[in-house]
Image (spheres, rainbow, N blue to C red):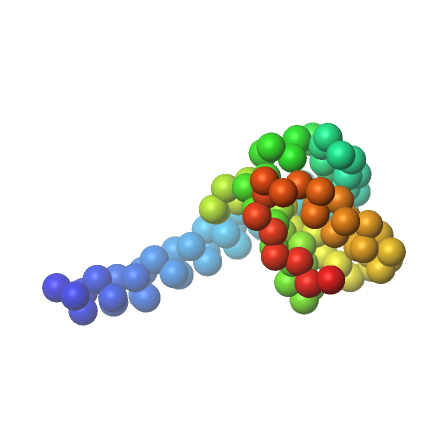
Length: 111
């Protein structure tokens, strides 16, 4: 029984997750269009060519910075990804400072 569960996870679950994520990415033009993020003490605004969105910091469950991205998680399965490439270093420094003023949000920052 244990081997069956491991095989199921490896050969069915992971490919399903990958294919589902890829289909969502390819099918949703909002995901691919350039976006501008505006951060303030109260909220985060996301503005694209065909949409705009706004959410408060209370909606963020955790923040993780990797080598190439900063991820703002809304829950364990959903996050806004901000590529660090092209973002001026001073803007990243200011964003990290702002994030550190939010002690109730768990965060793992590089700088």
